[in-house]
Image (cartoon, rainbow, N blue to C red):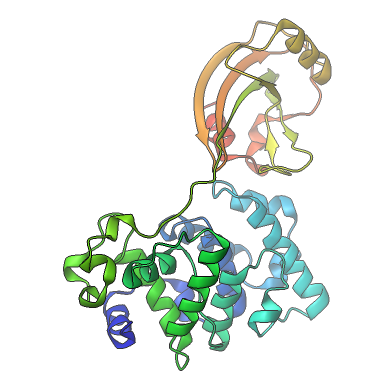
Length: 340
């Protein structure tokens, strides 16, 4: 790959991103955690919110988990926020607030994998280790015409070696940013700009008409459907809001009380009776269906129904409805409550 052409393209086309103008490991780490599974346009305002609220690792470490989750609300993949908070406390408590200074040491941090460690090590310390994210996989696969699936053991090893071989070891930070930006803006998943690509003459996929077929990724996902019935139970300006317990995508977030069914059928009268007893609800009326929606996650499609009813007495776990913004919750529930 012609590194000079790639770097020249980057200098002319790179976006202004705040974390590109610092070598502070805290800011680079924060941006990389936010951008896992998240596009830049969505992640940028969250990065700015976190920097404003927690300008350094010490301020993040002393925050409560509820405060961190509340600020993260709407970004999804909440394990990232929990790992972010855990790692901040770990660095402050066990390393005097100083980040590790090498790729191998960075890998020991919770929530930091190969890509994130390589990004921090190269951007902050100019360590010659190549990054490998979805953009880089795509550029390398197309340029070298490689159809080995990128999500297999063989593919991961092949592309990791290829990325390292092509790394500009004299300026790894610049090169890593350039190849990722090239994949994000030029060699895009759909409708890449091949007609104005500076690497087109040497790109095997372009020369052989394989652009749309590369990279290859084996489909392993099995989508599970779940049927969730949430209840907005009102009593004198209060509603029930409870903290989710146990493991799961929304761990430690708050939610409306829930009945889950195994299919599209409505919950049974027995289930509803148990629900009333559990939360000490004395219903004033039958539940009224007010909204239905589908919330799609990576491995799950949630068929969600929102029900509304009034209670004649104060139920358990009731809070003032005016205080709901103080509680971090899944965005689908937050959006529903915004309408009431």
